Length: 116
Length: 115
Image (cartoon, rainbow over all chains, first blue to last red; front, side, top):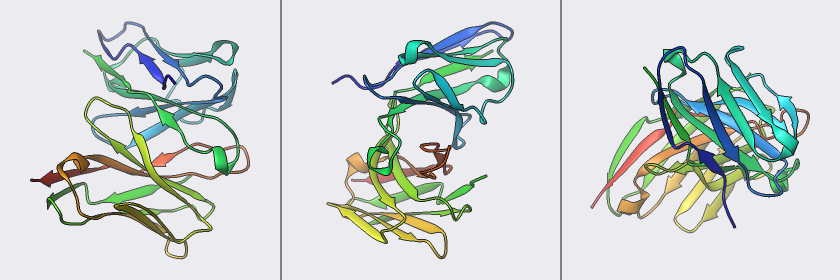
């Protein structure tokens, strides 16, 4: 069974450019989460999709970040325009259900974004 | 919102010794506490978790304890091996309501096990 897959694994862009990160969750997982780890600090929540709907986007830093989940399958996270402080590792995770027994969140390998 | 503090930030042990990582949380409503291990170039992987109705859970060399009154939980690794070397993250979450599944992470602990 395929795990959570993220593309690209690395991205180096210049300040002001646009970057789009993609996440393919485990098939059948309704919940999809985006997290970010900046400069060796803690991993911080960005947002949560349930199928195609945004359940919680309280962690999105500002309106330069746009997340979508087309048809409740894969998700994209676009940063436009990118700033230096956006550099970090972006993780995607998915989980199956909404109750404690289905809690395990499976993480992708992350996309390392460097803005120069 | 929830805040999770994790200590120590780095931990170095000899193979065969035990390692303990401690976390505290602020929101008494949190009821799910997973621990993740992240190896180089990989994403975090769940190694053990505990729910608020349990005080301790063991899985082979790994155990987690939870003290709800004091709002802290700990990871214990016994008989450490070099392959245990990684970054370990604790997290807290509230299941139920609208925020299910949202994890608040600690800062991470770099564990190094020397052969």
